[in-house]
Length: 274
Length: 230
Image 1 (cartoon, rainbow over the protein chains, first blue to last red):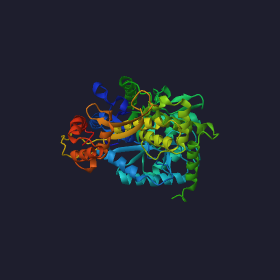
Image 2 (cartoon, rainbow over the protein chains, first blue to last red):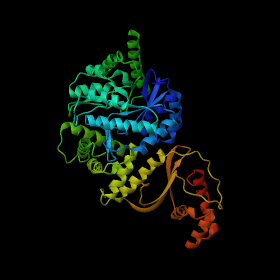
Image 3 (cartoon, rainbow over the protein chains, first blue to last red):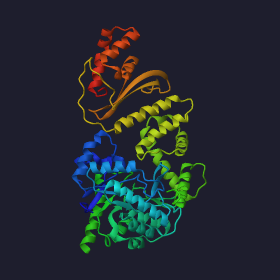
Image 4 (cartoon, rainbow over the protein chains, first blue to last red):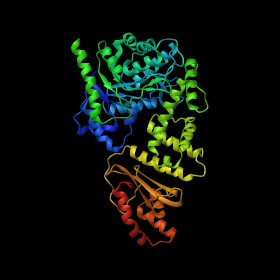
């Protein structure tokens, strides 16, 4: 990825204003356009200074690339305006759907894993790329059920990437959570993913829900040892930028910095061992 | 397009229906996870936006109203705007029967959020002059309320008038109670210069123009200084 190297962090309003009082300085930032297209005035200056001070990736929530609807071009144009305004070159989204018939759920819903779905997504990826004039990067999402399937997730993703030409945002925590919830081997999934397509990686926390007997991708907990180990395993095969997403129960910046440094040490250790 | 992806569309529509009508459906555990996730997403925004409102309804009322709201999902891609859709939905459907003050409270809290999230171009404040024409800024709203929303007893019927505006110095949304005369004056701003409008209102209400000017000059100057009138 042009300009994006090393380790990053998702920028959140919870600590934006604390940044100038803190020495924490990640290699790159990731921002969610939908959360920054409108913002309280008190954040405007700090946001601009932060995204212009470091390479930044935009990571969207509401594109709904897998929706069986027509693409909402008006929204995609708003995304382009945001990317241009803050000179952001890279835009990633989730391989899922979140809306249908323009009804929004604000949640990442699982796709039917079919050949036709791959075609639909590929067409929509091209439409999006035509508008934003940038390549789209797609993330493997968590899913708690598969509503309909003709194939395995890893084959579905590889084929989407192949047909659409999109790059991949490999979310290591999502692989871990999905593997646990659907009884497959996370390392095998990593082995099988098309590594040439991976642009960058996500790390995050999850929790185990006793009521549903499932792991839930909450982005609200520290990253667990299993996910750190899976990252180390993945980095041995895929040397790309990696970053932490924290969206809930956001701790003080110093605490986030500790987790960031832990990630940085792992990346360095794996690189040095090569 | 619909004909070519009928299976995919059907699967997604079924999924959406289960989420929208979550209270009525006996669904599998996996669907329930999604139902909860979507519910919590809505609930979080509503609770964070309507901090006062939720103190005046029970937890069950909030939950039930969100279940109903979920049947009519918002069209906006922006999560923070869910709150406005919820506000409009509960009012339109009279979810809180016989408690009209709740709708006014929802309006008040929503406007606070809306004015906070708006992007404003930097503008110098206008100079005050009776011969100038002004308009209500996009950073301000005026509203006639029937309940004492800014007082301590929201349920008390008391006709009152507010100007709510974004304060560029403190970066906060402020409000102040105005009298009915200023309210009508601000509503009529498009009709001419301040003096022309005031003169017309004075004639209609049998008020001496000079007296009115003396009383109104300072409050109007302050609203202009605060860029509520531009």
